[in-house]
Length: 296
Image 1 (cartoon, rainbow, N blue to C red):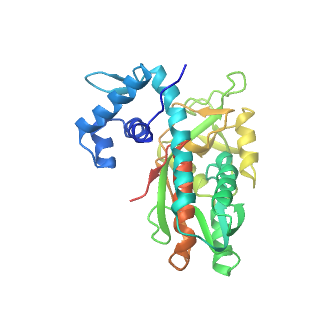
Image 2 (cartoon, rainbow, N blue to C red; image 1 turned 90 degrees about the vertical axis):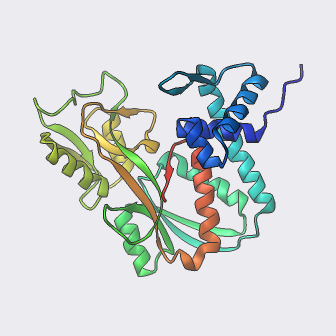
Image 3 (cartoon, one colour; image 1 turned 90 degrees about the horizontal axis):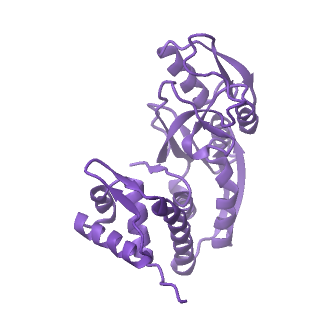
């Protein structure tokens, strides 16, 4: 039996509707009318013989088949974009010493950079992962060329590239998770990086404003150490939703933390030939697995 070929254009339309949560907003992103988006999704459903969206008067949701397809669609789109870039993008050469904040999707970073190295073999990329403020200090000293790190609220330095929602997280295993509902009966136990971490500052300020009793019971200079404490049920911590490992889940009943803005620090303009393809590659690679919002 010969199976039909999937059209990349239809898959991109479908994934954009899923990411944007509607046909109208997807049309704005893709520069198409709502009716054109609807026709493309209908064509995809006809090819596969399944419904990918459940449409009601109030909301649009993925069907079970749509959820399965979205995983494959993102992988296919990322591979398509990588192949096209490799074949038609102008040659990129140079050396780039890059610092990356450890809170930036740690489970995705190494595979993304490995694929970047294969796509741009003439770029010599040296990567250091650490805490944002320490990497930025190293960049100012000239030890790094650029840093992808967190930008604090109200800060104007750096070039914003995307934002993502922050979340309180705790152990996924219900036998390990502590009673973390609201901190009224006992202080909320926290696992945090040392002082200077923006996520730590945001968490403490948010809890103080909400009058939630809390205490830091575990401090580690390593993000992996903080994650391990949360996975063990010792405490809750704060991560970007894109960084959630398999052993953690979002903790309910705690005040919202808002979003974190990631930016490039350093002489980005002087290195645009290297920066543009790197940032574009990271954005497209992440779109295959997580939901980040590009900064305006």
